[in-house]
Length: 447
Length: 181
Image 1 (cartoon, one colour):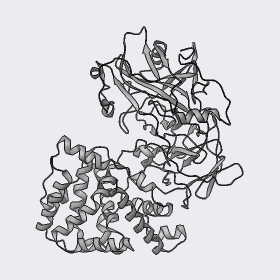
Image 2 (cartoon, chains in turn yellow, cyan):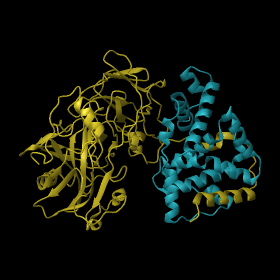
Image 3 (tube, chains in turn orange, green):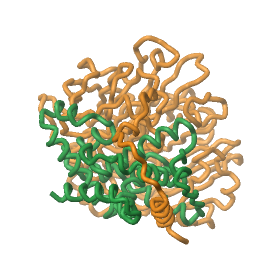
Image 4 (tube, chains in turn red, blue):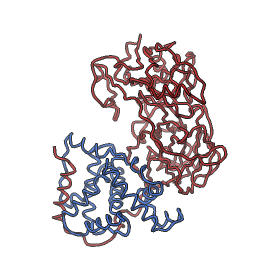
């Protein structure tokens, strides 16, 4: 195999030998066409401590996490759309933290902008801004249309954020992890916003960008006293490596949709129909149409005692297939002290007739930008069932009824809390700031 | 000082008219261009196509490079960025420069696609994060957002020369960081 970059180099050098050098010296002018009407977006990363100014962010009180985009309603604008900012737990085994997204919807609209965002992480004492997004992050169409919403997620210690010259007070909400806060800002049409995530795994950003409506924005967290919180980027520790497993017949049930066709990447482990030995295991009972495909578990649980606010850690995830629909399942434990009673699912609403379940309705997501959402579009909504001191979560499927059916069929057959990292055991003995409750037994009462 | 020397050499490589000099310039910046494109584009074949067209366009227009406007890597990233936007809009990667130069399209097999994916997978944001805050801001605003040196300088209340130095130094560090990965 010849390195393609070497081939390209040889091609270029040959071309250079052949090339007659062009004459006119127009300098940089040729690079740009007269106008580039398409707005661009760039992913966002919160840069702390920079001194960039912001011209277009107004107001000092955070907007709510759910509302309507203001501004004149035009076909080329998101004005008039309803928006919802949702924070969901990270489901992959071994991960701890949150993802976020913003959903724009409009009643009767045949075309619905896609969900966007994508934050993963949790706030710590030294890095309280753990994510945010603006919709444009992964939605060029949203940004090209102008009016939109951006948001910053913070830990409990942040009472305001300074964005350029504006100070915006943060709010709490049942839609946020317990204790965490958020600042939500409307972006005027043609306004420019640029937010960059500060740390954590990279969210979905692989989209062709435009880059016109953007401005580098510094986000500075402020304490209750009004003083800036000195933020220091410290990489989050790696969790335990995931142990991948795959059901023997899984290949016939791949989700036949775009990027989801290859959910499994890694060394194959096809033989067992159940996870390799790990701290958590899932099994199913009484639902023949439910087929397990692949999943991950972990050899030990690595809590995150440095996290501020509520945080969950996933100890097993699995992909199921039922009646043509993919569903993702996971078992979540308290991230500070696995085995302790853990907090609510942010934004979760009671499920009628299922007293131990909550549902977080997030709707369907189109497969491509600006394409209609149909009955075949995958679901982002998730439903969770409290099982002992864990949340059993199912996301996707065709709807709530199916997720309830699956939750009632799944069993947590193993939950071994004896395998905590030694670092964690040490820290647990000196746990501070949170109540101390003995972990559940390895058999996980109630499972 | 090193940055200035490097950029002078880049300008010389572009203006020398010696074919192998362009190869040297390619060697120096291909990783940065690939990483930049890879941070936005998921498909390795598209990334490679854009890299090829970026350097073909740079070759075609090499005499138009003006070192006083900024370092060569910024010029290359600007080309890559504009090509990326145009290709996103059109739904395909342009190949005009390669066609004019008589360059053939490189056929890629799976192994080669993996090589490209590896190179493109370098996390540009991590590299950016490793820069000092003032350099990072200068690089992003000048190179990605295309703000003028004057505007950035006015905003930051410093001289244009200071901003130029930050951009130049930041790009040099970025290139070193990417080459080291």
